[in-house]
Figure (cartoon, rainbow, N blue to C red):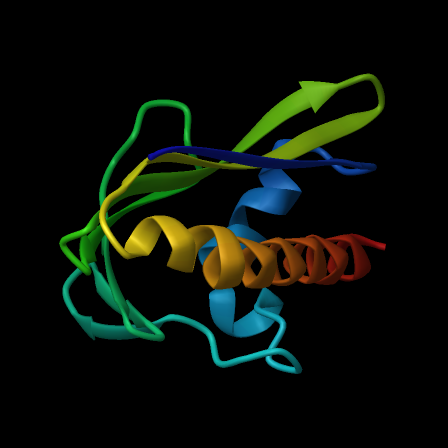
Length: 129
């Protein structure tokens, strides 16, 4: 199953004020919902039952590949684009879920992801105001 999920928020700050906040999940992650991804070794993060590998993606503030579970071949990244008087902060997920992970993505992961992303955007917005 192909997966595409995107969240955007216009923030009244330049991209250079937003980038450090995205770089610091300990500061902006909505811990009232769940723990932030935990660094387990160089550029590898545990996020619940998932393992993310951070990688360099042109134009992205941060980018990750899901490398566990094998049935989820996803990339997700944050971008910040200048907009009139501020910045569009965007988070995109693209990839595929196979087998039982099609239903797990649709029924459990995506709804939880949407709540976490909007709360993370709220935290970034609060930090810049």
